[in-house]
Image (cartoon, rainbow, N blue to C red; front, top):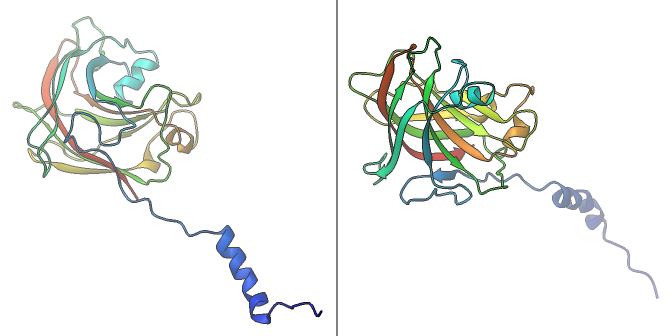
Length: 235
């Protein structure tokens, strides 16, 4: 019996079939809504409900929570309360935080701050390297206005990564317009302290923090509100 020979057209197609098998097309995962605050728990169920606290640090150029971890006092900087209430950014609800912060009159500037944080389940992390931007909507306000130089930081915690425990970014948008402001932050721009790149930290994120640092001197105080809505990751 004569053996069957493959048709030349099939032989020509083999390289293309190999490429199709070993080089699948990249698929855009689309946006991931971390929280739209329409329920009491984050939309991305890997994260826990938000908590708020006051804290102090000693490095005005870094997030207050990071400063405390690097040698700051870490003590309570004031009272911070968070609720979920209407209205939101085009939807029914948003996170609404009120804070009253004070720098004790002790001759040392301690940089009190308000911290708003959501963490992943204990012992678990999420990989954000498939995304390029963290986007959220926010309003920062008070009457009278907060002190000039007040800063807002966004911090991605990666406490299981031994070299860098967080990656942070400073919000430069004006959040004190009285209306919702869209803030897009490029993940590649989040800074780490000891590594040259932040991909390792982004691969094992276990918390998301918003840190408001009023520019108050020793013995001064400040109070205000911070509204947050529609946090998402996208390309």
